Amino acid sequence: MTENLFRNDFKYYKQRVPAPSLDAVIDSRNPAHVAEHFMEIHVENKDGDIPKNMNLKAKWRMFASKRNPGLILILDLFTPEQELYWAYTCLSLYTTSQVDEGLVDKLRWSTLGYHHNWDTKQYNDDDENNADFPQDLAAVAKCIAEALRHQRYKAEAAIVNFYPPSSTLSGHTDHSEHNLSAPLISMSLGQSAVFLLGGETTEQKPVPYLLTSGSVIVMDKSARLSYHAVPRIICDLDVDNRFIDLLNSSELVLRIQQDSRIQQDSRIQQDSRIQQDSRIQQDSRLQQDSRLQEESRLQEESSIQQDSRIQQDSRIQQDSRIQQDSRLHKESRLQEESRIQKESRIQQESRLQKESRLQDVFRNKIEQEKTKKTKQEDESINKMNAENKNEETINKLKIYEDLTFVKDYLRTHRINLNIRQVNF
Image (cartoon, rainbow, N blue to C red; front, side, top):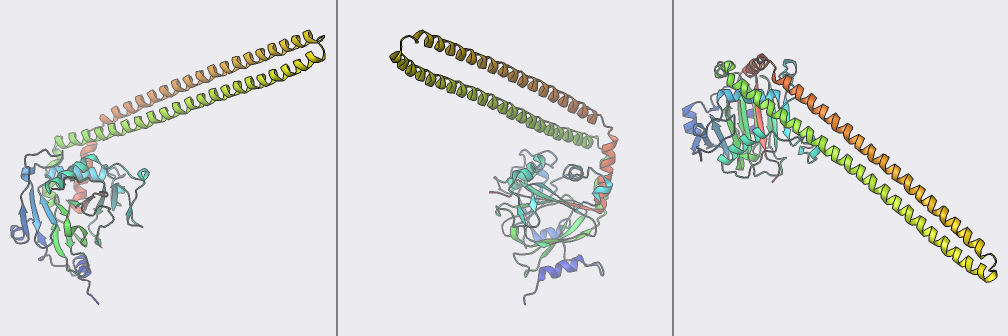
């Protein structure tokens, strides 16, 4: 029976008593480890444009693993302030917790973009159950991918993992995506973690890496389908030092407020588009109903005219027979026909007048409905604008409190964003 070397190492680094030795763990902060286990990669287009909330490309450091082909480690991609910003975003915008201490403690994961079904291990292709992928995070992922010459990369799904100190992530491979040639991008925030990366089977012994706050790994080529796991979270005092002076940053507070307003404006625009589409559909239905009534009226008039012609033909034949039988009743028949024609015209005019009145009533009703709906929409927009104005005047102390909580959260927890492209 083949030995499961991956599981053996996972259990070793997971054990609490006795604590495992970390001497074999490759630490990117150790220059000797970097020189022995990595090859530095030149960052192309260092002066190129970058998305907001990323460090300048000239300050990036990229390394390719010698022991795991296809594994790329990127350091200094974020400043400490940007790390705190992304942690705040993960806890407040990428979940429903709203930086609530009672809820955040229970967080384990959140999905963005395409919804992943954990039972079937497949992505849901139903657009109704898939949310839009955050544009700011997509821009960061695309910038990273393009630096590694993946020009057509498009972030479509992400899993945000929240790790308490005692949590782990068992060994697995990521093969649910349709496009397995697109790399996996993983961002680490907060406490450090031991990351195991093996091969395409569990028979291969994994290599242990230490992932620190702000580090990014890209799993490409053969590393893309390799077994990987997180057996241990390591409390690192360096996290305190990274964020200690950031709570007094008015620039960070302002950026969070601006991003919040942008996302809120986007939601308002989306709601407005939905209301407008609904109004267009309702108007279309009303117009269609009006056309159907008009067609029904025309058909009825045609039927009446046809019946009238049939009656007239029948009367002419009858008149002919009557003329042959007796010319004495000719005047009587003519008078009768005149009376019938007159009654038919009166009835037809009466029907036309009635239909005209109904159309006027129907048109008035449509106009009233439009006016009422427009008024309701205006009131709704005014209400939303008032609410937005109130939200914009919220005391900055709330954001300071949230940032303080996020900083404290990162002292004991780890956040990991796993970004991937689903389709070709």
